[in-house]
View 1 (tube, one colour):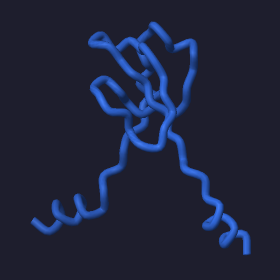
View 2 (tube, helix red, strand yellow):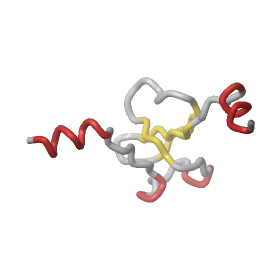
View 3 (cartoon, helix red, strand yellow):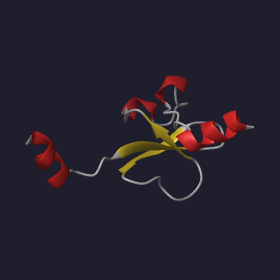
View 4 (cartoon, one colour):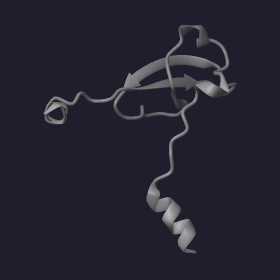
Length: 77
C-alpha cells in the first residue's frame, strides 16, 4: 500500500548544480529537476555555501552514469 501512495504523490527530485567560471571557482548554486541551461553548470552532491568563490572540490561533483544501451553497444562490437 505504501508504494501506491508513493506513486500517486511522488514529489519531483531536485538535483543540486553549481556554476563554475573558467578557473573552476564556484559562482552560484541552483536546485532544479532538469539541468540548467547555459554553460558552466555541473551537478554536485550537495550545496555548501563555503564553496562560493572557491574551487569546487573534486568529490563534490556527481558523475552521471552511462545508460545501459551505451554499454551494450560497446560490448556488441
